[in-house]
Image (cartoon, rainbow, N blue to C red; front, side):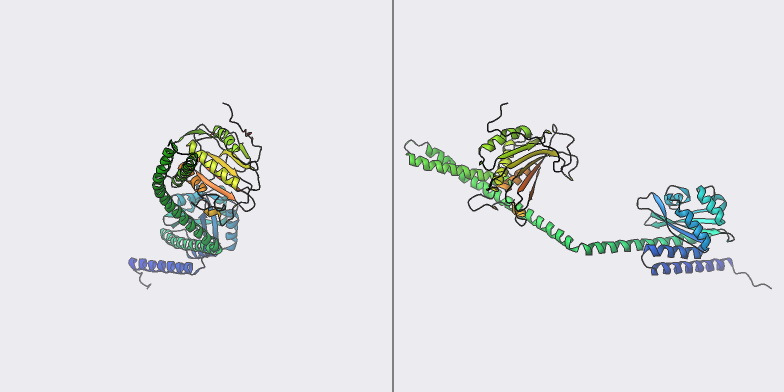
Length: 474
């Protein structure tokens, strides 16, 4: 008499226990594997093919999201596995093609009888199904945080039985375990790359952090100086105004002799010089008033350069160049002239042995500033240059590289303050014995060139405007 059949509930419990053991074994193997995708993926494919099919293929979505690339293929029959590898390797599959496209798009498992597969796959894959005697195929998604990163496909060949619904559920569980192992390996590899990058670039990163801290400290220092300068300037201006007015009244006294008039005149001139320093303080502190109008820089320099040339020493003539593209900016003409005068004075003082002071006018796009064209005013000398350790301090008020008594140390501080008020930027390029170029960038306005070139050193000839000693007639 045959033994009694187990109850249906007992059979179900036994199946669940067996399924749990399979999943635990697979998870254990995946977690013990080295976190190297090149070695992990074949191991996962081999374990899946042993547990649920005759062959397993793992494919991953490419970085650009356009392709589904075969990452591992393992099977029980070496000949059939080699045949499948040749066909799959010779035909790249887009993510929107074939049965895998449904899985990638929906994130759901594809489960069809073998008879239906032939109508759904490409011709070369149809022949492969026949050559392998495929009797069933299931494709499950590899899901990581709700995103499909690839697929796991298992195939059964004759004389194995077709897949069942229980097989589909088991493959989905195995695919979830595989996706977790792949994600862990990917994150581990990324952490190794980051660690290697930090180790290889530790010194440069430390230098960058130190430089950023130094720049922040410098900006805070200049901001504090600006507030101090503005407060001092307003109070100092009141004193200077009283002195200047008193000097003017004394000069008008009828009984004052010539010696007295000379002394009072000297006092008035010194008061005017002090008043000019007040304006430098206010410009540095960004508190000087501006009268912004549309300025054609070509006309502006045609007027200004001859005036500057008349006050230049003979050993440092001014050479003015323009690209002739048309340059219009919103600026205060008087403050713009002050910017240029300060830069020309510095360039002249930096060239005691002689040499041209070059003023170059152009229109270009600044790197990283978008399509907006900028007017570029560069003043260059052929002097001794500025030492690298001194360069970061040149915009500090009262800091000067000139001999004692030759400068107030406010010239470049005033330039920077005025340029900032015009929403512009100042750049300095210098090295010892190679001269210095100070470049002022000011946003151009409508009426200038709409399609400005990207800034780069000029390669072709640049039109050179003659510098007359007399004002040009209009």
